[in-house]
Length: 220
Ligand code: AMP
Image 1: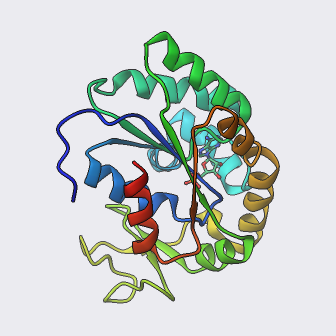
Image 2: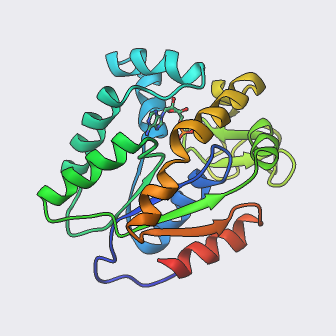
């Protein structure tokens, strides 16, 4: 655990579905006292609460498609305005397209803020598929498990809060394949976008979560 007294910056965790972004973002945000903003979590919450946003997002999520930029960008901007600007933030799952990244930079610039580093957790499709197809998460606290590598102590019950575990609708194998295709086509171009502004840092996401966490923590 690192003791944090000053704002260390604003960061993006980037990588394919199944690379471990959610697990790492939760740990890093706690360890470095960053505000954690997961767009996937925001959508899942909206779907659960059956809000108009949730109803709109659900069909895209279940099909493994990206929610359109004109829906997600205003939602993220609104959330960013609510954050305490004296504390750094960690974005998990956003941006995922070049227009999202450009708009984010422009939006932050107007407030004299910026994205300082983008941490790219890289992993092959084979590894991501294997992880996503074995993944479950807690219906209450969101803790993530893997049936092969990190099973809960009691089957289908969260170790931390004893609530039932569930499998995400978009972790079904057909949807997983489409999500990876969408990542390669629409999100992978962000590598060049952030490389060209010297903000990209690469991490080998095929390693075990503890090693990945240490690498990320050192980079921040
Ligand atoms: P995640 O939990 O990050 O894998 O996100 C789950 C789903 O939410 C994605 O497959 C998309 O349908 C939607 N989503 C999350 N973040 C974004 C984003 N930045 N742009 C578009 N759709 C998103």
